Amino acid sequence: MTGEYIAFFIFALMAISGAVLMLNLDRVIHMVLSIGLSFIGVAGLFVLLKAEFLAFVQILIYAGAITIMMALGTMMTSQHKEDKKLKRKGHTIFAILGATIIGLILLNGIRTTSWPNEAANLGEDNVIEIGMAMFTKHVIPFELASLLLLVALMGAIVLAKKESDK
Amino acid sequence: MVPLNAYLAVGAIMFSIGMFGVLNKKSGIIVLLSIELMLNAVNINLIAFSRFGFYGNITGQIFTIFTITVAAAETAVGLAILIAIFRNKGTISITDLNIMKR
Image (cartoon, rainbow over all chains, first blue to last red; front, side):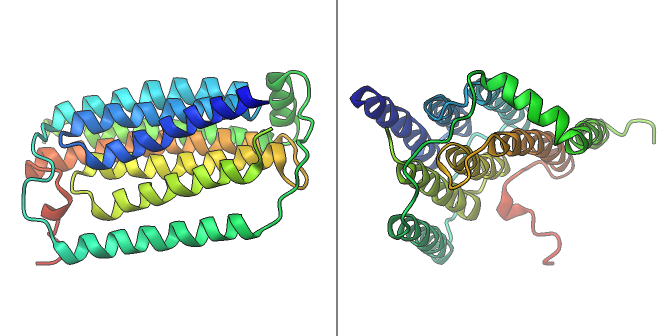
């Protein structure tokens, strides 16, 4: 039982410290890499929640694809100085205030609610359960998701390509 | 067994950090990353409820798959928009994108 607690604290620390590092580092590329640490920590939390398939998906898509794509985007847009120019003081104060209030409301709600204690039985094999549910109950959202990915792919190409033929 | 509210607390903290990043950061890429952070917090909540919720079942994980799909599409299109903006204006700083204000 204590091993699970230790793993939880390590992964939660990874997730939150990656996010805090993203706010505090100076260069954009370091921020992108530190958010990768956060994504890996979240994948570890998924493993602790018995969602192994989603942990793999998280590492493949977030820690792999999205982080690398953001790093490439950073290189292509060459932003070296992130926060060098004038900071609007009032804006920062209001941003801190808003985020803190939202966080405190959420944490207070979590603290005061009485949650169920027993874990649900999600089956022996996570992948089989997900496949059965996805291809029986959720077929139409699945097809719509593939359509969305196709549209996003074409839209990204159209938006990012050079308009040379005009 | 780690209780449900520990996972929910991690999700809430990550959501607040992501929200602060969206509101305060200047670089467009970091704003996109903060949005991804908020979506990740939501994913933690969905999976935690799928295991420890009142009627825990596999549907939370299915929802998470769709969330990840939408987040990947959003990242691709957002990055394409940022590259187009950079080509036209030479910067992706949020504070310089004020053409509608003038």
